[in-house]
Image (cartoon, rainbow, N blue to C red; front, top):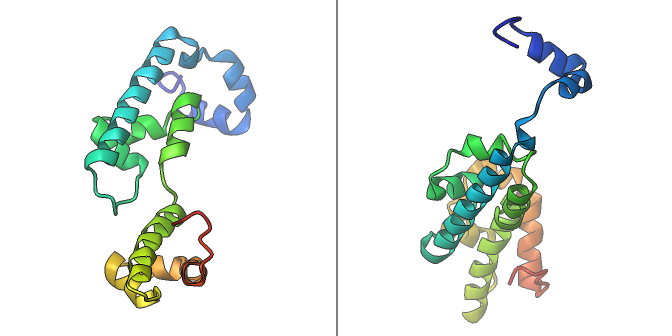
Length: 159
């Protein structure tokens, strides 16, 4: 469509997407894409198993890291997530949000400090995690709340 009428696809996509969708044959309906999804899902599962076994336990699990280990382009997976429910569900299970990652890392620090009879402090977190200033400022409330919970014995599933 863009070759015949440049900008037409973008215009219809923005102004009358339903009309465009009704007239285009979607690749999603082809058997090829169902096979492609299952193949890539297996690659991603193998990559996750490799990360769990050999990866850096302090590193956050991201789509980018999964794709790199699987030998896939991140844009290839991210750009198709809306089409493939199985891959989307798997990604939702294994990819960590920033908050989940911070919670996991803080819990390990708190557990180690607790065994030594100490409480976790912000300096411990900054030192061991090398938190960048922007990350600290963006998540400061979450970080402070998590430190209080970890020091107060409220584990909230993190330890």
